View 1 (tube, rainbow, N blue to C red):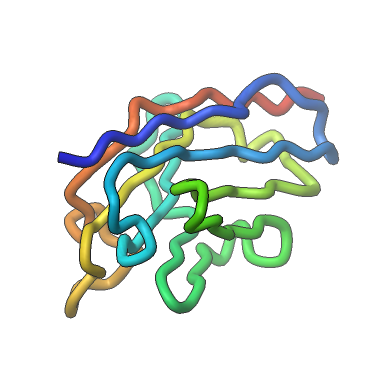
View 2 (tube, rainbow, N blue to C red):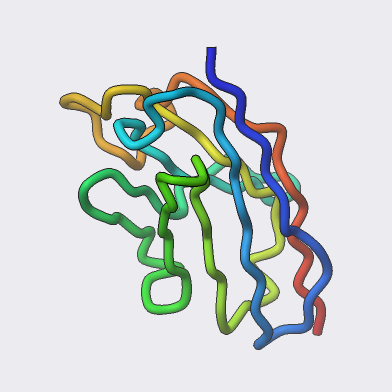
Length: 124
């Protein structure tokens, strides 16, 4: 069982930045494929970014968000710059132990474990 705990959410003005963190349990974190998803009010959860040996981004955040990981600290980060009103959402961290296999990293079904989410609110 893998536990994921997100942190770093909050209220920020449009154009500002936030860095989300997701701390994971487990001794083999370096082999986990990790992802960030978000869910805005009234909308379905959507893919934001993912990292394994490579990184993947949704078109809506490419060039503004950066996903990274620190395997020594069992943590994955999401650096969010140039935030827009439409980035307001609950952000979820997700993990797949031993990689995604043949599944696309942008699919929710590619992940086995999910965090509780952290709220990001972008104001004008």
